[in-house]
Amino acid sequence: MKRVPEVWNVLYAKSLKTIYLNGMKRIILIAVLGFFALTSKAQLIFDLGLKGGVNFSKVSLDLEDYNEDAITKMHIGAFGRIGVSKVFVQPEVYFTKKGGDFSYNPLSFAGEFDYSAVDVPLLLGVRLFDAKLIEMHLLAGPVFGFVTDKTLKGDIDDAQFNKEYFNDHYVGLQYGAGIDVLFMTVDFKMEHANKIYEAPTFSGKNATFMVSVGFRIL
Image (cartoon, rainbow, N blue to C red):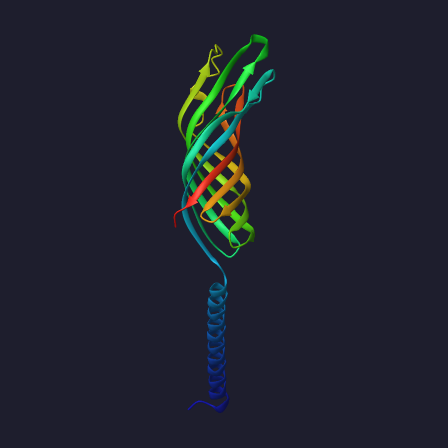
């Protein structure tokens, strides 16, 4: 037969456990109800669409006496948006063409980097204001590029200017702003990528200013 203090200890431990479990159930229930209350009032964001636009692209070389100029190319693809209220994630995928002109003044020769890629940006967006017909937002995030075609144009005798020195992929940063009007969206973004071209004695990095027009279909 157990002594009274031992029985009391067992009953006290069981009571504490019951109180703890009931308390945890109340906390979980309150958290779930609070989550549904917030999401029911928040504006859910889910969009899918097509987009395209122009690239103003330039390849900067770490060489002296070289001049670089931007060229105009294009991009076309699709985008999505998912988020709550004023914050959303905007993944994109598009086919793009980039590059840049360069010249070497003392010898008076010129050439052009020209390459195509599939870009996959993953952007975080924040809405600055959202009226009935118009909305403005900021965007920023990484972009992952996969080169599909590459050429070097021009009369260049230097063996280090060869398409074999193009990298097959690159990583960059995109940032900018955009505006939505009804079902149409317009984005203005700047992209800075890491080395797209790596010869034995020099390298080149790409910078691109992009203007995109998109249409939401969902």
